[in-house]
Length: 342
Image (cartoon, rainbow, N blue to C red):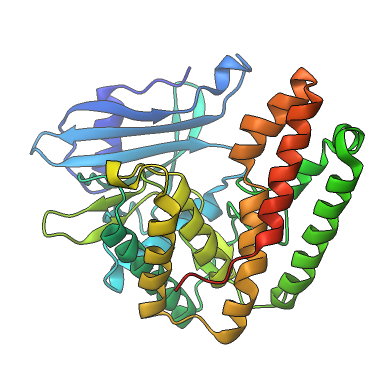
């Protein structure tokens, strides 16, 4: 297992021009690759390092096949670009003019970045906060477009390709079992999915710009004076801003924590609030408004969390009635195609 010592952390902070007298460090996040493969040399570790002068920093260690040094450097530079244009994000530090520095520690080759530690992570999302997050995302999109900023990384969601959050291909991987349960419903879902995709193909050649890519509750914070900030550009990559805006709106409206008064209905409050905040800064075009029902339908129908939680379980247990109920629900979702709620 990849292990660092206080001396390692002190040396790294010194290399990045910071206090080298580290008091200690605390692990914030670790991926345990060695559990699946004891011989693995892959690493993803994030630590908080507290320097002798009291300043806290975040040190990120990474060694992953899909995260080369060039990508991490580009992601870090995009974060710095946003910060230079007034977006609240932790200050990143450079060593030798670059934000990424390679190290060999305990037999592991890792890429290291250092930034300020920021408190105030958002846990609960209410309507006012959602509007603020929407506006924050719109500002980031404006900055990226104006600077023609690009990062050659894969993003969480692109309706024109496979992705990690919303996936028709994951649904279709169960095709035989679904056809056996209700062929008519499955074929109708396929037909409607193709119809949605045909509309979205009009944006296949739309300009793509760098996006932060993951406005989750673990990656947003509020400063002591009330400003919203963002960190963790691990999933930063190029995307069509409209695709990113709608994906992030649905993400914020479904996959976070909400006040008790929104129990059972967060999306009906949070989704329009987010989109309203975005629209106030970066207005949606008539074309985007017309495409929204088709994009939303795809997100709503093929949310991987729902497929894994319900459909996959029904298939694994062979419960045909449960499979038919899942198909009916997916068919309903992809059919309803609501207008943009602003």
